[in-house]
Length: 416
Image (cartoon, rainbow, N blue to C red; front, side):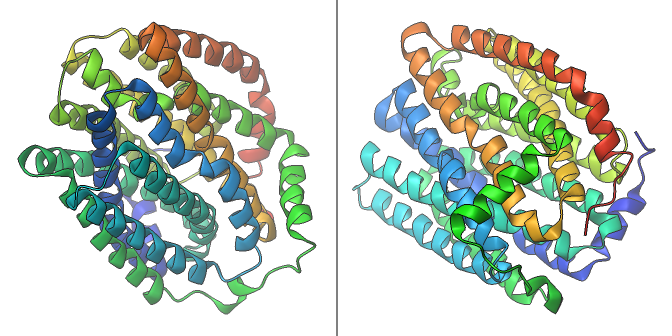
């Protein structure tokens, strides 16, 4: 990899639009992670069931598979900035509804599942739009640093949000963490309002129909072996490794016999590792070496996951979650950066929506499967089986690294 340099981050922030976006996105992400921990703990308190913990996590992320690709098509047709603002306003209303229902004592596990499904659908719609917008906020030479530093802000919030939420829940109620999230959406809505995009970014290719446009994104990925291999590696990890972060409340309640503070500690540990990963990639500022980093850190992800599944010491578990957060973030952010850097702009929304569906949607299936198995077998054995499946797939996909290097690193400039 390249020698780390602060110049890459400084150059990214010299882009006014990116600086405005990052400033507005910060508090919104903090609120998002506060609400996620609050919902996870509410699920356990209302049900004391590993199945329901998995089911609510499923409701939050399964829309990425269905809703995300549809909005990826629309992101290539319509004004992406206006879509982003509308979706953020809808998320604000969802958080307010959840807050009111909790304060009035109306919230049961069924309502929590439904409201989480709504929030997950809105997030699924927003992600491909946001990812398609980020390259328009910076010069192309700053894209690697900008994409990586965006992951840093996300994961700093992942570290601080649960820590703050754990204190709030312990001293008062999860409702106030949810209210903070609702108010925080005003920051990112304001940021999108202030961002001034070049007029040409609003031009879109004529539509050939929703189905054909969506299918063209699939064909775009399938016909490029390097993209298909990259999608395959990280889809496998998303299906069988990432679900552990959605089942942390179940680990806390069974293996560690802890409360919201222990849950906040483990979640924050994942965030610390992810922040370190994002900073490393931000300082690098180029694509060379990212393919090897993806594959090596995918292996480290599996090792830390297997150890965590059989760990009963909270502090050791937190260390393993830090390693997990670091390695899985290097793989995910490096992969997303390579896709961003190589895809044509007129297909960006569709391809990135498929990327979201492939890397963030499978945990919905994985968490439901592993949560269900854990109800009968406990938490450790299902993750042992999941790690074995990932390892077999990773060994097979390792053979394709030369193809990925040639496509992503030797020809790093995106098609235009």
